[in-house]
Image: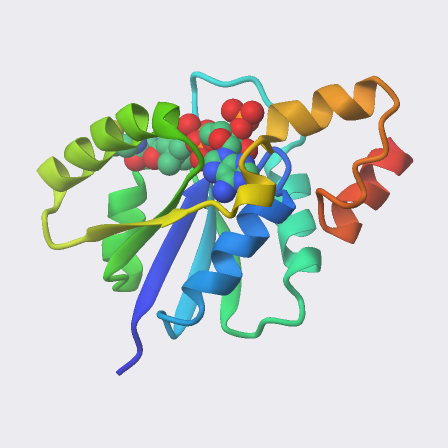
Length: 157
Ligand code: COA
């Protein structure tokens, strides 16, 4: 059986917290599609193409992982590719309410697609894409918190 999951998010940019979730999810799923989802309520630092290419470069050693983007609903994307599950990470109780709400909306659309939540490891609990960008703007070295291609992109910018 080839069990596919999608991992949707903004990934503006992808961090080591996200990478950790993907590596752990690979122990369960045969194939993971990291899906850059366009969220109309957010302003992004990196374009969709930049985000997709940073994720591809960061996960090039994982042939079971592919990367794509969508401006539609994540559930529709999952249906289109035959994915059984949607992966999300939980860092703190504050993530829960938001995830609970999205999960209910997604279930309303298609209850066959299950959401699976991974608890972030202690060392990644404080990371978010915004925190990373704030630290970079303040001159902090975040090379231990993001994959090498993302760090290179920050230095380039
Ligand atoms: N490690 C590090 N950071 C993490 C993390 C982890 N494990 N898990 C979440 N985050 C951070 C992200 O970096 C991001 O930080 P930021 O707010 O500082 O940028 C934040 O948590 C939330 O990010 P994300 O998981 O990307 O959520 P989102 O709200 O931007 O997007 C989607 C969530 C893409 C799943 C949602 O917008 C979506 O589904 N959009 C498509 C439309 C749709 O289908 N809607 C649902 C049904 S109506």
